[in-house]
Image 1: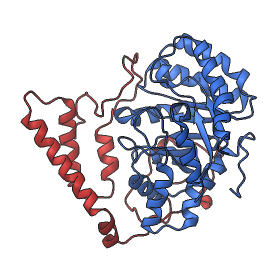
Image 2: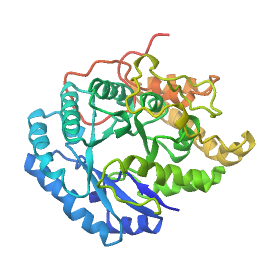
Image 3: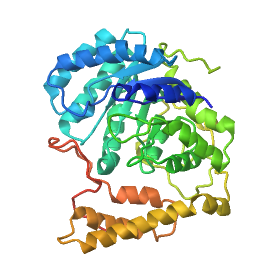
Length: 270
Length: 131
């Protein structure tokens, strides 16, 4: 088995997780910028975080032969403070030419507020001006449906944005259709307590097709499972899906999206 | 234009989402690029693989409702939304998961003035949608 983990917050994980992921067949890991679990007090905190994502974490992963890539932004959970967001977004261009940066993410909405929406528009403008891929976080639980609609409105209203260069993450049964039907990629996040379970994610792939669909663990500092993508692959095999179908969903699909960024250099030979 | 689910799926009855809001053909792959991943199991195999797990979760739901009702105090919007959503389970049709998620969702369309918390609670505190 081979797979790409397209969404994992490895700065919050222990080194054993890297070993386990490589042992399970992980070929590359991609880390979107994230909320630390507490609000950072200044843009300087984000500068250090972006250095961690682009310098330190790739070295830590490289000790196990695992390519590490990242996405940069101020996460929607910290977007209520627009002034701070402006300062952080102003920092990002100086990191965009670093060799492991994939694009702008995970941007999006959390509670669907006006300020979050304004900061989302600022991020989308940044991505468009610099020709970057976009990774979008959709809100949790009761806020997801409304937030996904608002996010799609923002993306659709910016004529510079090509849907095939945007992945909308954390989709579930009530949002996946609108995302795929508008030409965007969709990410299914596999969580033990919320979002999708492996069984539901496979249901979604069976119902909506596996094109422009990927699966990720989004493992972070909370309850999450770094190996849940390969475990879901095993669940697919239990259902009788072919090794080729599994490979397409957990390896080839992420490659198809991510290789739109020239920095992503994982070969199709695995 | 595509409609959900993708061609070749056995999940009949699902409807395309937001038909009126679809974009034009900006980088849109088109129907010929669809990749189907059709269900592989018959109903007997689904039951063999998932019945015990679903049975366990069904009992958990029942036990949760018992536990909540044994406890002192009043319902809040979460329990009311939960009860409404459980009624969806007994309805016919192929979209129960989507319907439950929608029933627990904020149905409004305008951004809120400001975020006063970061957390979601799992149900929308507003009035239930009218039939």
